[in-house]
Every structure is written in C-alpha cells, then in structure tokens.
Image (tube, rainbow, N blue to C red; front, side, top):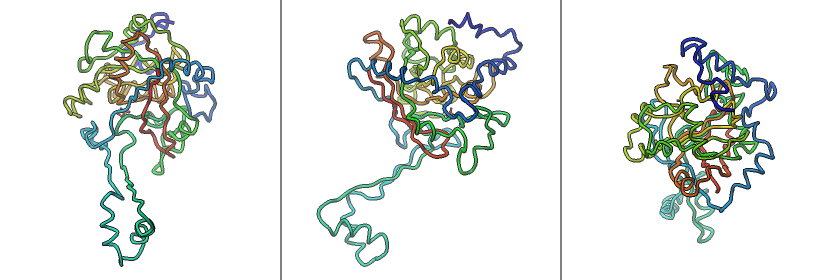
Length: 342
Ligand code: UVW
C-alpha cells in the first residue's frame, strides 16, 4: 500500500496539532497482541520472518552498527544524561597493590592474595556506569508516555523508582529480540548528499520514493533502518548540543507509514529518529505515536556509514539484523551493538 492509498498525509481533519491525535487513534495497537503484551510491534516478527532474514546473510559480511561507548559520546549536552564512565577495578599494575596490601586484612587483601599468591595468573576487571540511553540504544516501550498512559494502556505510574514494572526492556531481551530482516532506507544517498541538512523532516512520501528507487520490497516484520548521514556530523564536530537540537530525522507522520507497512521497529543514525524540532511543534510527537501508541521500539545513535556504502555498492538494501536487547530488569532502554549480516 502506498502512502497516498492510505491517506497518510491528509491533514483535512483539522490543524496539524490536532491531527496527530487522529493518527494516534489510527495507529494504536493496544490489546492487539493481548492485554498483557510487552513486545508490541516485535510481534510482527514470526519464525518464518526470521528464517527468511537468515537467507539474507548472502556473503557472510558482518557490519557493526554501534558507535564506540566512551566518554567522548554525544550525551553531555543533554542535561539529564551523561556519557559512559569506564573505571578499572583490577588492572595490570596490581602486582604492586598486592605487595602493599599485605597486612591490610579484610576483603581487599583476601581478594588479591587468593589469586596473586597462588601462581603467575593475573587479570583485569572493569566497571561501566552509564545511562542506558548514552550510546547506540533501543528505547523500550516504557520510555515514553503521555496523559498518564504508556503502551497497551499501562499506567505511566508503572514506571516506578524501582524501574518499569510493565513494558521494560527485560521481556524483550528475554524473548531474544531483536532479530529479523533489516531494510536500510538511505535517504541521504537518495538525495545525493553526505548528510541531510539540519532540521530536515523526512516525509512518508520521500520514504516511498527511496523504497522505489532502491528497488527493495517491504515485508511484514521488517526493521526499518533510516540513514540521514547525521552520525558523521557528530563524529566531525563533536558538538553534542548542536547535534541534538538541529537533527534531521523522520516527520511525525512516518509513524503511520510504519504502521501500514507492519514494521517491527525503526532505527536511525541520529539521536531521536525524529527531526528536531518536530514539524508540528509537539515535542517528541513521533516518539509518542511510535512507542506509546504503536508499541514500536526506536533504535538511536546507530552508525550506518559502512552499511550504507556496502548496500550502495551492490544495490541490495536488506540484511539479517541481529540487535538483541540486554534483559535489564526494569530498564526503559538498553545499549545494543547491532550487527548487520549480508
Ligand atoms: C528523549 O528525547 C526523551 O529520548 P530519546 O533518547 O529516545 O530521543
């Protein structure tokens, strides 16, 4: 079905600000997969869809889609987030520590002595502290809510100080999600540019054009991966604030386009999938429609440069995508190292 068939861009229901609520009603999947569902549109990925996706690993080429996790990431500009903090708890200098700790007693001396006094083996250990949203990530279905409700009608108060008690990332991780057919829609390449201009909103009509030009057919359960070229912008300028406030991305009406195509998830190489500011001025409008109403996970801060070049080089745009969520109890998102296999 094309966008025009589905009347996605018909704004005759009223001013755009009101119209997003009409779209919300049309795309809402609450109850569709049961009153206790916590997987949302991942339910579109059937065993047959995974079998088909596995056939797309044609050349055995493995392409990682994650950005590096370190303190140089783009999050320091976002007031409520931080880049990852990585600390060593045991390191290569601990031979000396073992010597100095003799006589200290307690856990520390015991911990070091049990290994260091018992032969030549040495090791290193580390910790990482980070927002689950710091780098390449999936948003869980409890990440966004409005008017007191999240996906499937669960109350937003179910996200408690102990974590999300409904629709957290854990059930998705425990179900093995996300594995399926990935389809790259390379909007930047389609326009013949390295990266889209700041604030560009990608419309459903443009996605139809990209699909047609790339010659790729969409199937139920696809994970749609959208390349804006915007990761390069951060990589070059290291300006997290500008990268966030100026980002190109999808127009909020793309939510209905994804709904009509029975997509399982959507990911992009920017910070929010959607463009900033949203075309209708309603903050996080696409997030609200996709995550809260449809039950669709968003993948953010994916590095799609190598994948884009590889797809363009042989004119195929689909692949086996393996991007499993970590089953973190109560978390509203997860870091992920998505892998495209072609
Ligand atoms: C918000 O902007 C709240 O979240 P995200 O990281 O999903 O864009």
